[in-house]
Length: 386
Image (cartoon, rainbow, N blue to C red; front, side, top):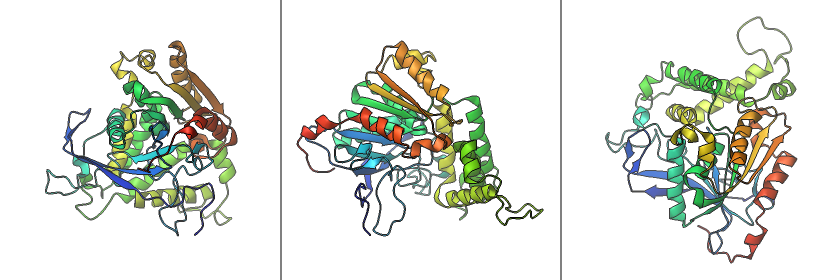
């Protein structure tokens, strides 16, 4: 298969092992952990061109390119990562990670628990926070020999990680890009997450989180959780244009099976998700969302938290995003301005809702490319690819 000219092409994930114990915010300790990583582009001689990509709730390390010659689906942010794209891999060395607690190769609930005969951790895997993730990402930075990231970038839950980076490690990033995110969840968002969790916890196939040991998984719960989540990721306009009130067969069936196209779409999305995502991981990720609040260490003052930062910021929101509305991004912008921090802010008119950050919307892409720049980095002599 020939790949597009602006694709990073074939990529191979790498697993990084960390033997030192990891103390978590919840008070527990992981004796060791592994992190799955993909890299694109080449690290320059002074290691000044590295960009970290942080993923959202159901994301992972496969952000760009293809895993094999017949792979029909590129990485989740392939629209923005590649040679000549907004995150230009001919200039930048891009690192995409799968957070611990995930289910795509990093240590998580499906990993063997050394303290329980190497059975899967399952529900015994500790709850992790955004601060924990940023801590492990800093440890990865050390292994890669990257003292300072040129930029840390993320959308949604990934944007929260980028924000936490700017507070916890202000000297280790030059630019911070926070897209379709928020300084903490609203009560409504916590409520959506709780409905999703309850759909999983109440599934009889959940087995108190030990479904792998019972050779099953909470399929119905995962389907419902994904359906609830997916509704919040789309805007009303996007759903109207995509489905309207179209009937699958063209006629009312007067029953409870699929009749409307939107019902068919949601069930399909839920079915696919249930096959590819671990239920315990979903519970962990939604709790990390709920717990996130960088102001907790600063008298619950976002202004005080933002006073710690030293990097340049770019924030992007989308007009139809009702999961993380533009007002939530503006809270961060206001706190940065209060502290006289350098910040650019765009509210992009887009119809895709919260999922807009995944699409190559022209103004969004051009602005991201302009903010990252990177022309001066071409002067650096390249070294071997990590």
